[in-house]
Image (cartoon, rainbow, N blue to C red):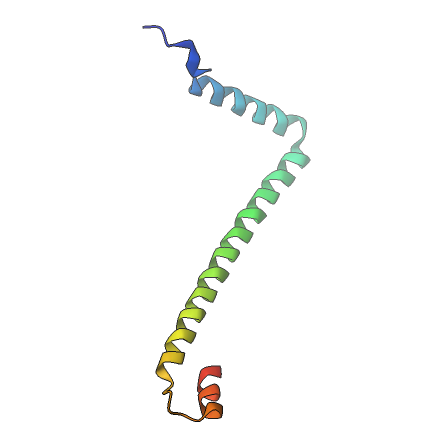
Length: 86
């Protein structure tokens, strides 16, 4: 049957068109294309580093909370502080 018009262009056709544009662009401008790809790679790498760092900070925070609850409240403040600084 006929597809309703409200759905816009056929996704496959759209994808093909975009791929052709990309191919054309990489042929016309290989340096720029390589630079864009490299930038995208670096962006992904940075995002991974950021996620890793956030996870480490969350773990550190969790460990600190555990340390605080492990340091007996009866300890003298300086001794408690030393235990918590570890």
